[in-house]
Image (cartoon, rainbow, N blue to C red; front, side, top):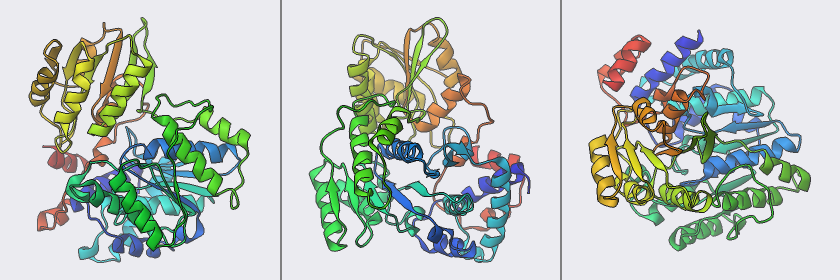
Length: 441
């Protein structure tokens, strides 16, 4: 199997949609030799901040001399971003080899139990990290926790960054309902740490930890006195959570104070308050504020870090997000607003975004753009630009700005309800081009 064929196969798996549950992942992992049993994990769930927290943990433990695997999602541009060892992306050769092995293993499960894209990628990561002999894997949930494919592991510790409204279609329509899904990563007698501040969410996490006799650490104060590479006051609570986890795990994995400091000073996490200095003095901030809580965090960061500079806002969101709330939060901060479609089947219509932005900021100039390229071109003379609304959209911006050196594989981030009809199985044999056309038409 070539890399192109591997990506074609992975694109085809999207036709199986997204199914919450652990049975298929466990069966596929066992068919691949149970690699999860040869690894140590820190399992990270939460509505926002989990990727940043994972990046901090990875950096700290790598500075301590460990060989660290990092599993995150979604990716900004390249599929390989999801699976890294010591911050080196999995190679094309390994993607091709492992995909071929997983395709053969999946075939043994039977057509009715065919794994989804995320289930296959989860087991791919496990197999790769085991083969690479990682000392520790920082393991981010995909969606929720309780029924997320990543939950087949028993970690050294579980972290829940926070609980807010997002992915209600899958996780529930109230904070307690979503908290129960996030708290599903808590394992009997395994330490759990959280920075969840919502009282209802914290009550659910506390009760779940009590039932499972899991020692609970609640982090309430942001990290102070630590030099950090990641911008924004909100990263201080993520850092405090990461540092608390390091302290809890000191008996199993000792980490010096120097390694902790170096880890926070050198953390990299693209697309989250990422500051780009452009020729001519233009500053662009990229931030994947994809839900209302993320938009509020971005707004606070802009007012704190760039309080004297009202930005030109380039906004693109997904239709299954609360884009009205995102517009209400961010539009009042901007002098000019450029709305654009996200390159996704789930994109929110730009004219609709424009209406919400005008309602939130009647004084702003609001321009509807055909795509991110036009939006960036129209904003080229603006001294300060913020690109946000969706992680997918930030990935598009990175490509347009020349920050990505590979061909885009953002389409692999798409998900939806599982297809169970005959069309789904027959399309598995179509070419990559036809599959992409059918899924994006």
